[in-house]
Length: 106
Image 1 (tube, rainbow, N blue to C red):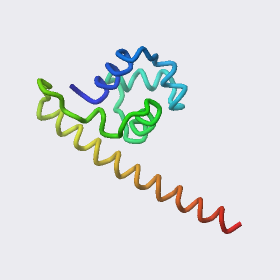
Image 2: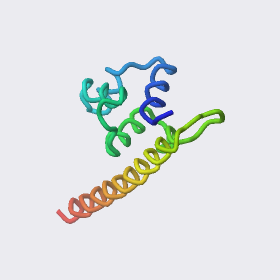
Image 3: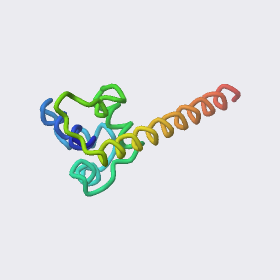
Image 4: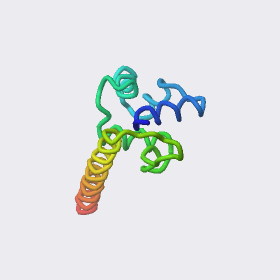
């Protein structure tokens, strides 16, 4: 199962709505819907904000469950998304650290 499908399933199973998630992530409802339907790629930054809004671990939707019949293509896609997400996350933290240092110097 692809990451977007796992997120969509999580939302449904936890009685959440796309509207609530869109508001929490500041991603438009339309864009979020396209990502979760697979009509638009789920980028690493959006994935980060979705996990943060859902208050789930960053790797939550990458974990394979028993009986999960992922294709090799799905595994490669998830691996690439994971790498990009961690890279973007580290850059974001570096930028935040730099901003905090600048603010302290004022």
